[in-house]
Length: 309
Ligand SMILES: [Zn+2]
Image (cartoon, helix red, strand yellow):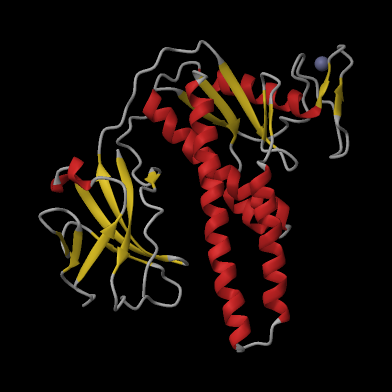
């Protein structure tokens, strides 16, 4: 499996990135690591010479041949070098003998079929409020003014902070869910449909959910668990006990069926998700191997070492 290791680059005379593109990628040529693996030299394109790598993750742990790609990324707080390393990352853990269904929520992060509700962390909500505030401040400043540029910079750094917090939460939560269950079922929400939604709260929740899902699938491979995405249709409308269609509007919070089943709306939905997930898994013994997808694992090794310019 490939994994990226981030390093802060510390060097004057940064490469010019195109306005939209924030990264440059190299395959096995065009870069060189120093003997002690502390310096990265880009041998073509950018004439910036040697980059000092500031980071906690030890590159010495890997063979040079394991580094499949090197990516130089510009972020609001500095430049990073990402090393895409091919490692077979699998871990064996005792089966939990449990299966779980997960359902996204706007008000909470998810509801699971075991009746648990995971809330969006408070620090995230706080950061998101701060982000909104800064966004408003940018729009109030005069276009082209130095003040506006300053606020834009602050906004970019805040964005970065929030996205790191979000990722951190997604990784930890996904790891925990996968470790404590043998099968994880969730709705197959289409990202394309999500992007259309302009409501901020909705788009934030969609974005963090799709990131979470990627990590669930990643850890599923690491720990050898089954992850299954089920079609999202009717999961909230059908009765999880008898299968009857029980129509509800968005404001109907309780599922009440003629069969006597009375459940919280989300719990009913998530039980359906789990049931479909289990059904779809029967007969499928194929569990993807860790070598399939390469981009899912992004391990940020370095957060320290701010750039000095
Ligand atoms: Zn029913």
